[in-house]
Length: 192
Image (cartoon, rainbow, N blue to C red; front, side, top):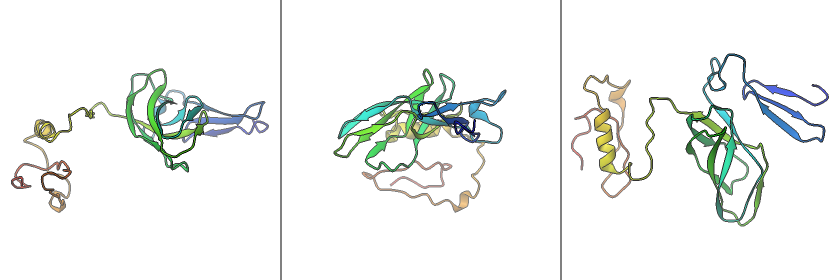
């Protein structure tokens, strides 16, 4: 192990070492009897790495495959990590794991080609809970649809939020972007 410079990272659950040719090898592992995404006392998350080397042409949009240690069929959110390659815009993505991989969109906005090496960690994948509802961007976020959705979620016996009296709900005029305040009926007054 010393000769190959083997490192076991229990935080990211990865075994890292140099092979005979000197190439870096990263192997994900799990602890016996504990799911990778549910380690005791830790948040459920997995490191997302490129499945293979990707060459990105200038000013292009590409879909890349990220390899991660999660069960097939699990839906989650990919969150990109800060990188020194500021000309690459990596989109936060909601996707379902298929064959241990998820698809992520990468934009190369600078006038040069870029080669992303295989196994490079580009972000974190966090599985969604079963009680989370994911809204798609195909018109479901229109003002009327969101109002109906919030009304359907509202409960008559809902407890007030902690420090609800200190909440500052900002209103915006029509024609500008609007946030959706989650407040009890009657507390915000009539709409403008």
